[in-house]
Image (cartoon, rainbow, N blue to C red; front, side, top):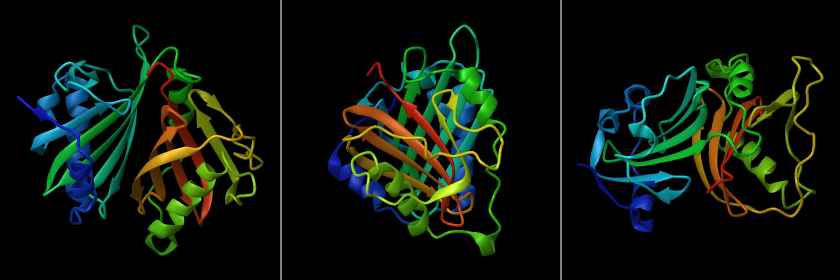
Length: 255
């Protein structure tokens, strides 16, 4: 039986953990996918003796949460952060009986998974359309970036932060890529054209706070768990040569 806790000191300890290998993190996200497919939370490995488990940024019971539900996964992509010992996994389920789009961050302490936080979006959440999300996400190119062309962690995070800061400060200069496409729920701003743009407007006066990053330099990507005002949210970015190429959002409205 897993013992579930959440404390500020515990999270700080996780964030300060030593570096991990990419192979270890890939094995962990593979185990997450296997656990979600089977509906067996204990299959996530390697688990710490004490695990903080959250859904929509609230402490939840891992034995009855989304991980306990067997799901047929149609698409997934994971980021692996070897500096923070953290991962992010996007999961798309198009099953018409109950479609989902999930986003999960996992964080390690002392070589084991000590924090699992999942955003569960389904019908009624912001622009939810799992088939649309699947259609567009599966067509994008998030292949590894050649090593000599990779951006630093700082550049990747700065691009994400500029985008997030724009919601409360329209003077911020965002490094828009050309082309760039934004997948917001199931709504897509791109058509596959060289003229595709992510600069299509965002709300005003909204603070995006409490940012928790998973940065993968190999993929040129970062996921950020955010308090979107008071709403649980994930923004995932692909950054190429310092500029935004893709943006994916998940926003939980029924929290």
